[in-house]
Length: 313
Image (cartoon, rainbow, N blue to C red; front, side):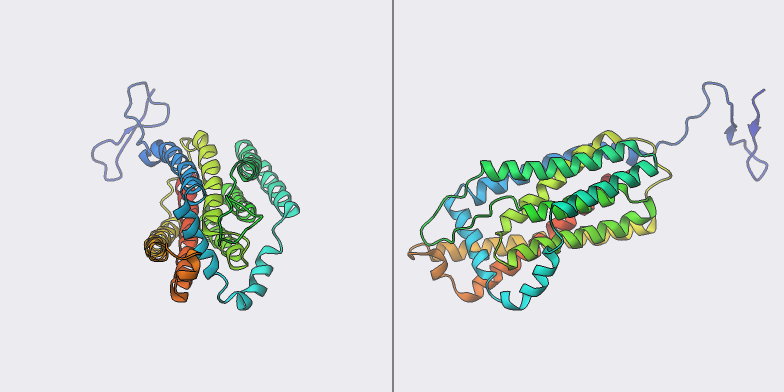
């Protein structure tokens, strides 16, 4: 016999209790959970389009090449002071570090009986880093008179490693730890990316494209699990604070980057008649281009972690 639960006040019944007959009032639906897979898919598409757009704009156009070159030249200022810290940040990046992080992520997932997360961790690490290496072979940066020649190309391998490690850490982190892991992951990714720029290993488009590649892989692989039931609603105070912080850094950082890009385009245009565009750009403009692009990289790293945190069930 179906029992009817009484309201605490003894007034109107709240509805059928356990074992209610068909036709009972349905439980409230977590609409955020129900639509999260859509945002994950859209985020993956946007990130993939961003990587393609960066390659098209900053490698395959003369203007884009010079804009990147101006920021690259600006990185020479203060390099001696930043070099020790940059080398320290990059010293841990390598194949052993990447494999070790993947093994730990898989082990944590298996211990928690999260079989899907274990598979996703492997696919994110392998897929993102393999994609970066393939793109390096396919995308050739043309040699231009007056422009520095670099063996390294788009996307940045070091940044891909850092971003993929941050992504799998967030993927397997317990729910209470995810806000902090997202912030730390964004910080580590940004530090690695800026370190490669400060040492003159990569241009801004290289590192931002690497972040985009990892973001696309991560969000795409989150789609199948984003609509599943979660252990409670996701609106914890820590998650809200982390989302607001990462979102703010993303908006401000990318906004500063856009301003620096516009200013650099103007500098390149004014110096277009010079034998080397960089030679015609004032030193202050070189510095602003580099600093602005570095801030944009921080914003992109924050945006990546922000999107992953919101997509995680």
